[in-house]
Image (cartoon, rainbow, N blue to C red; front, side, top):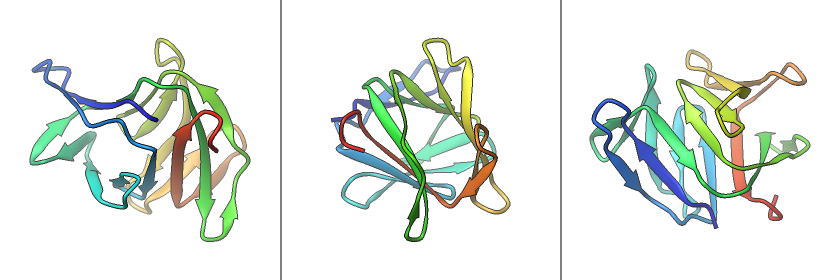
Length: 129
């Protein structure tokens, strides 16, 4: 299970929304395992229940893969922790590595390692990807 939280670094407000079995990010929308929209990304912030957060943090070991319709990338990970910050998926204890970045205009995720573009990100607990 994924332990997930939203955090506003200015107000120090943190809201836990986990555990979730998985997360799916399609363009600017973040979906929980049940398919419900958890948050929407716009201009550097994630909007969750009419509040804005800078960070979506995942405090569990995760595997991440990307999808375009029926095509699926190789899995990336495991990573622990992982974050969604300023339109990027960041990994490493101090958020030192950017795995992918969202292009808000097209809704595509650019994976830096192999220079590919994907419409969807899937995050699962390590061992479940």
